[in-house]
Length: 114
Image 1 (cartoon, rainbow, N blue to C red):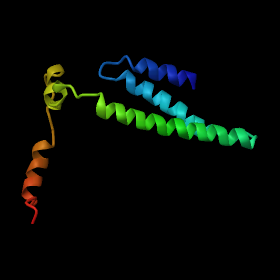
Image 2 (image 1 turned 90 degrees about the vertical axis):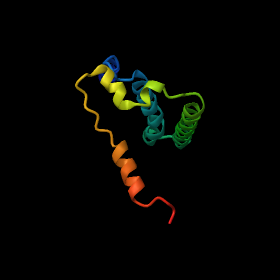
Image 3 (image 1 turned 90 degrees about the horizontal axis):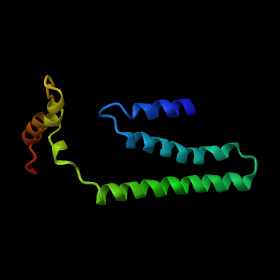
Image 4 (image 1 turned 180 degrees about the vertical axis):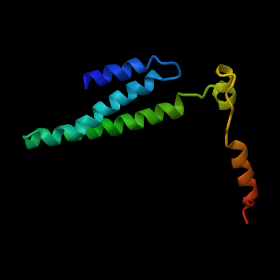
């Protein structure tokens, strides 16, 4: 397990790979482990206690992350145009965005509320 953690940690230094996602996965796995781990504890009291603790931490972290994401994080203006963002770094990048096709289908499928 430790070898996998180190390997994934090293992958965080690859360009365009977000280290925060790997850290979140590590912490999420740890918290889910608190829910699964109690199955092997023989004492009923500690089994229920660790399971409740794991579920509480899982639900709490989920809601705290959602609250943070919706109130504190603002999207970068340069990421609004995803194709343009990638074309900055890769000159031969061809954008195959489906935005135009989606808008075409949306407008041609009768969205007038009939």
